[in-house]
Amino acid sequence: MNKQIKSFIAQDKVQGCYYITQKSMLMDKNSKPYLSFNLNDKTGAINARVWDNAEELSKEFDSGDVVHIKGHVQSYQNKLQFVIHQLRPAENNEYDMRLLVKSADRSSSEYMDELLRMVADITDDNIKQLVTNVLNDKEVQERLLKYPAARSIHHAYFGGLIEHMVGISKTLKYLSEIHKHLNYDYLIFGAIFHDIGKLWELSIENGINYTTAGRLVGHIQIGCELVDKFSQKILGFPDKLRYELKHIILSHHGKYEYGSPKRPKFLEAMVVAMVDELDSKINTATQAMLSEVQDGNEWSSFQKNFDRYLYLDIFAKKQNED
Ligand SMILES: [Fe+2]
Ligand SMILES: [Fe+2]
Image (cartoon, rainbow, N blue to C red):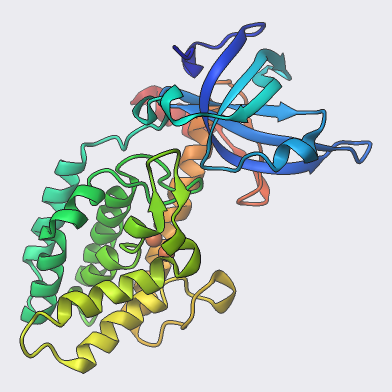
């Protein structure tokens, strides 16, 4: 039985299986490479370091994998850190994924109910039919209730994808009330479909990893195929509408350099891309602060995703109030 990360104290000797996120190769003051990554279980996360043979060991595993480690906990600059002595990929029968990856705060079925209520307000029959048929599909539903939205950055926990969809839908709904000329139907479609391809891009069997379909084709293309497959079954579904909807998926990463094959060419597509970025950045920063706030420091460690240190005091105060 793994020792839970939240009960780690300095000098603990630990061995067991943990889930890896945020792996990166860094350089120390003497330009010697070392490995830094987070060990996770559902109770928390701890930063781990490998000082010797870092390059060699780095080839053995990646973010999203589960590894078996031996090592000890130390206190460094008032923070707990894990020093790895041994590390190897874990065997499938050595761990239970449900104990290693945390879940969204609310249950996925509550999120699903909230999503369906927003879908009920769609007025265009074709869009409503398409969205409803996809959400009622057995395979989609089974996956959606447990899938994360990413391997290691934002919403990287069970139920993270549906939480991300609901978060974006609510923001978009609100924006459509302020900016009345925005088309609510296209926005809600975008909230639900922009990342839906992740249900086949990622596998959650052993760690959170990319599938072959994910590596070769990716969630943007998979999402478009889903629109083709389900819209073909709706009698008289207009071709033009199909292209418009697929454009929202194809352009949601916003820029060519972020892997977007198209840039958003109408307002709803632009707003979906912007709100997607907003929601994922808020979640990424929140997760980073959550994993550090209990150490009582004023500033976080350096956050590569944001290229800066984050100030923790305001967040800590709010945490204490709640
Ligand atoms: Fe995406
Ligand atoms: Fe997204």
